[in-house]
Length: 184
Ligand SMILES: C[S@@+](CC[C@H](N)C(=O)[O-])C[C@H]1O[C@@H](n2cnc3c(N)ncnc32)[C@H](O)[C@@H]1O
Image (cartoon, rainbow, N blue to C red):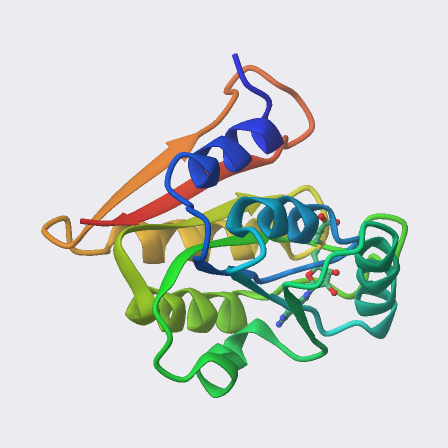
């Protein structure tokens, strides 16, 4: 069985093609950004957001090391996505909720802006496009965000979206899990 991260990547790999526009909503240390960059190739584009300068700088270093030039790093909140993408159609997006690994654990994603961002990205999503959300919830504030995001996703109209949850149910210590939304 695939790990949570491997499964989240597989969901995107299955549908993203060369030339696509995609979003890393929480670039953090840049791992998902570089993954997405490879998927869309030279003709595609990755928009990568983070509110922390430290995260943007770390991702920038990773991109330079790998000679990656198809990423626009945006030091701003993912809830501002319509401002940066206007009417561009998006094939996929990924969120890793929670705090920056090895960073300040008090700077976390929060339900209001996370849900605002998901909703804005759904409006930009292509047919068969996917938004993949990796929900970390072991930290303070994590349970509230998990519950609000799950409630929002579970209420999405089934005629327009398919929503999946992938989770190991016998693991201790609040392990992360995946929620994915696909536009029909
Ligand atoms: C779990 S980390 C992301 C890990 C990252 N995907 C990686 O591969 O290393 C969560 C990130 O979300 C960022 N964040 C919190 N609120 C945000 C917001 N409104 N918009 C964009 N990023 C945000 C944090 O600064 C943090 O870096």
